[in-house]
Image (cartoon, rainbow, N blue to C red; front, side, top):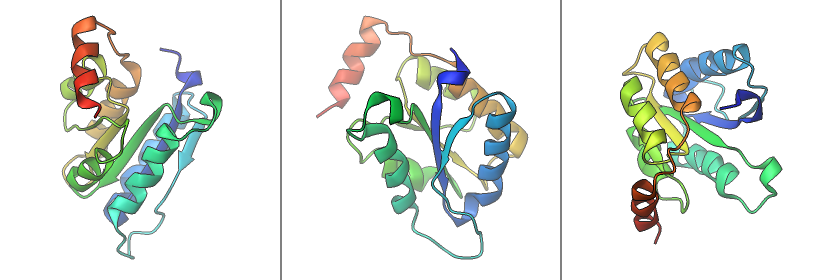
Length: 155
């Protein structure tokens, strides 16, 4: 996968600010220059995670031209659960909550997940960056059996 062509949108709630900033720094360090940060930027003001999940999901599924759409999204909240549930309410989004690299790799390979959710309060930064790496560097297998299953998710 050519990382230079990736466009990544990222957002967090108040619990995920520190991890989000570490992820953005990491993505830049590995050559991903197209990153859209939808916030939030402060951890001392409580916000509603569904609002930020929606911004990332819309950046992926919008009717904008393909060149302006995000390729992948990253969502962070305290556990990642709320962001994941929120994201999966959006048509065309396949969000996976991952807390290990194996799941991150397999959700891209088999499920063609386009959004990754993570918990800032459940993961250390090092593991979170390893999960990001596995997620963004794995491509969908395009095997027909997986395509068939993904089609069954679209209603």
